[in-house]
Length: 528
Image (cartoon, rainbow, N blue to C red; front, side):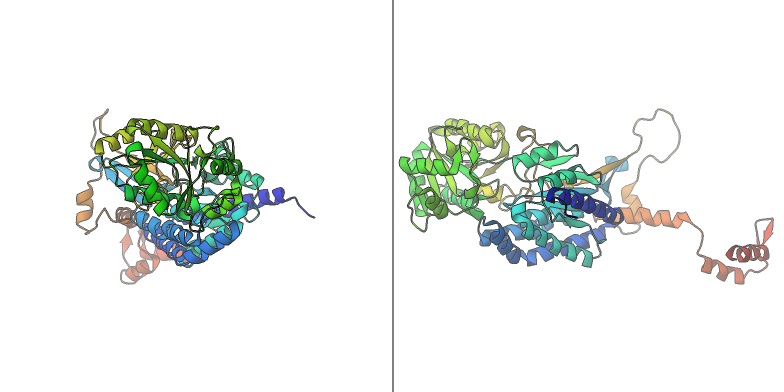
């Protein structure tokens, strides 16, 4: 009997969620040492295959550049691992208020991970690593245009995890991707949380699924060059950002806002780096091909500047790195003011930082509210004004926004899921990482006595650990100590040890009513 593809996808989603839950119920009892061994093995395996997976992603999607996808794969494995390797995710993870508050980590369960076509292998590996770090399982729903490379990246990590001791089935991936299957996954009873990275339609579906979800919105990142900036560096950073992997990161620069006194220097430097400035006729041709109103033509996403120019019927040099068009408004009447996810920059000239401030706000409100803004300046007061007043939750300074916002060139948490906060319709405003994928249980002792009485009122942590030379800052040590104490108090000596004692005390009376011989008789009858 043949079944429709959507029905097959729904059934597969249910099956995979159930299998992942079964594995997670075993995995949740792993200690910190076991978890860290598994996560390290995953990161190493993914990093080792970074080039192989980059080529797969490029061949399947046609987006971006292999060289930059290698960097993203390495970042999503090696850099992410380095940022979370010392994070405590098992047992007691924090002790506060002189031992009166203990924070205890608990896994969330099974994570449903929506994987975009723009960054498939890097996002899939990133989400798998941070999920398993917190003793969760993961079921990925890949974009149909990136199905095979997503499956392969998770296969590599799954094999590495199992070789390192993980239960079989912790990492799952849908092989028949449909909207119906993804919706069934998000609503499945075994799913605890959704990590939604992708188009707004998919993110909205995640939030309406009835499950807790971390979603991300569009970027439409403005980059402001203020008159005190290092012009050469600022222009290089912006062009690097918008051309990195041909602009498919949501944090890539979409508009260059330039303070009028430095306009000529900026244009000169941009041209030196391969930028092509469109005239009004060429701009119209580009607009007709790139966008209608505020809707982006997906055909140009992740393509090179030369490819896009040819597609629009514009003649540019072969070494063109980015297409730049001067714009005067923000909104549907200015098609290039949208998020373009390609090496195209809207170019605005402003008089002073205050006008630049207003233009940045307009761009963010049109399509990137809450996400990211870049400022290039050497005036600390102006930098702080931007930090305090702009509706972006990531403001990167004197660096490329594309790779700075994800934490590659800044001290931000390395992540490929960037929360835009409530401004952008999300519950999270930070870079999503492992710390967001665990429940925190709290053990709380009394601090204000209602009734007097002598009882344990806290854990005296230093005294509790010093005699055993244990460091509470090391993952799992405090938990191990508690487990050892519980085991020590839990039971009687083992049976073999008991018999060894009894052979030397055959006439020993235990208590006042029963002899050793009688006990042996009872044991013998019990065995029968």
